[in-house]
Length: 201
Image 1 (cartoon, rainbow, N blue to C red):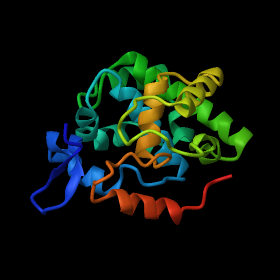
Image 2 (cartoon, rainbow, N blue to C red):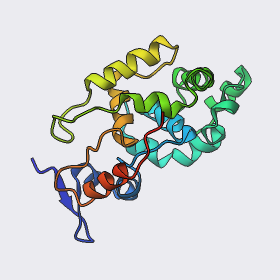
Image 3 (cartoon, one colour):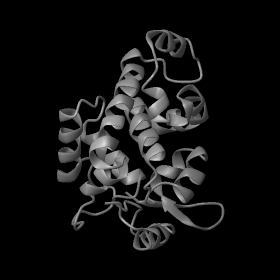
């Protein structure tokens, strides 16, 4: 099975982009590039939780609605959401109206605040799980030792909807691993971004 597909612009992209044009800008400009901004990291781990059992396209097309509903994923604000806010979100047709996932996002915002107090930032915690070396081929696995360890620690700290597969998808998207296919036109760009990136401590 081919791992890449040539686009209308002649560039090779990871095969999953072929499913929908909605994926192209996300793949080219976001997926696999390192992120240290706590708000973006929190947004992504929450959206990966919402994706559980669904396609990323479903989440991506609703991402702006999610951002509006969850105060741009400012965890300090989301942590203050009440039962009234939950009921309002359950009526919001622009997002995934799943009570467990909505409640998990609010819970995780509270845990994120605690993590910042303890670790200094979410970034310092998450980047601790960057693999020291990559031995597998890109997009050949859905979990890793690091994602299993991250998931276990997050759950220990009270986070929800953060299983190993969710954690690995988060790591792929936020640049902790470069899972662009080996002949993807954007793999080198992601690698360059990582080389110029200062790892949070």
